[in-house]
Length: 263
Image (cartoon, rainbow, N blue to C red; front, side):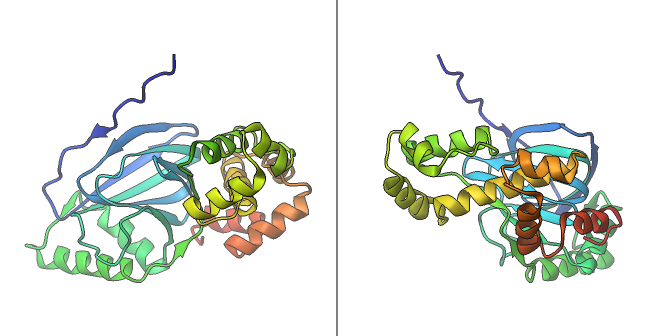
């Protein structure tokens, strides 16, 4: 008998318009599934976080952040030691961000605003200084750029079986035709379902899975060659090319910049 899914923990409503929390987590730490009445901006100044919701997974490298709208159940697992800075904003205070999760770039100014806000426990508009800080943060959030570092879940049971098979072993070199046949459907059918439900082709979805897995492995301290093969790349050079295409720099340069706070 399959184990029943545990209901997510409901966190109490916070009294202020903007509340901050600072955490230091070891590698492998899991924050169990929960949700907040507030919107959240979860920022990693080091390490990599993987946020999972019923709709998919979002991998958050250092110097990036994940936007989690109010009442979205989510869990977080840490790859490498993680320094987390979280802003809880009264729901819809930042009106231009979507009502779905997304990974966003954090500009140098927004990074400094997040760190400064975290020197307060709570911020309220009744204080002139804190009101200005809240307004600056919201202004910055209105202009952030999103990054394609999510892995959406398909809903159809056949497509979901394919997704789960690929996730169990991203390094498996089985063809997509073979994986689809094992799930009881043709590749053409699964392709159509993935495109409709995740807005990614099946091949793009697999590429995204491998990239996100490689980020987790590198953050955990694995060597580049091992991370590339473990994530399913045929060669380290193929991995480096894909990494550069998505994140703009090589893995070595990216993690060097992240450790120096220049992500």
